[in-house]
Image (cartoon, rainbow, N blue to C red):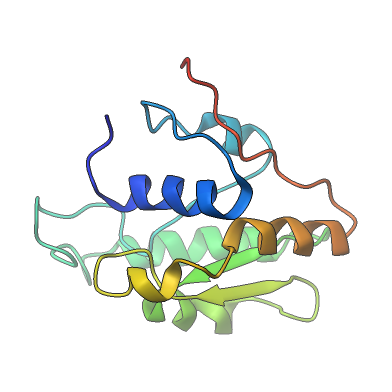
Amino acid sequence: MIAEDVPSRLLKARRDDLGCTIPKHGYLAHWAEQGGLMLNAVLTVRAHEPNSHKDRGWETFTDAIIRAVNDRPSPVVFVLWGADAQKKAKRIDAARHPVLTTANPLPLSAKKFFGNRPFSAINAALVSAGKPPIDWQLSERV
């Protein structure tokens, strides 16, 4: 079973939002195959030390990814969860790309995150942009 961490909270929020089942794994390739990209500003940390690798160069790399996705001519839905992510909004052309914001699913702000129906909001933004919605259901088998 998935430990009580961000991925498991995401899967619970998805269940509450869309009625999807929670698999016994956290393999999210199905989302990526449909065009979903989940990206943190910092891609590594020391165990149990949030932000321990902040300001060590990851931000340059992840900002370049945001810039490359933003430069795509076709609309992309950007979802900024939490204050740190929302600071990245200045790198996004919101006139071309829908930008959704909500609290972070981390423990300190999870209460604000739950109930926002982020997965329904993402699909609504995709459909409004002329894109197919994401099938958020994950298979029980990897």
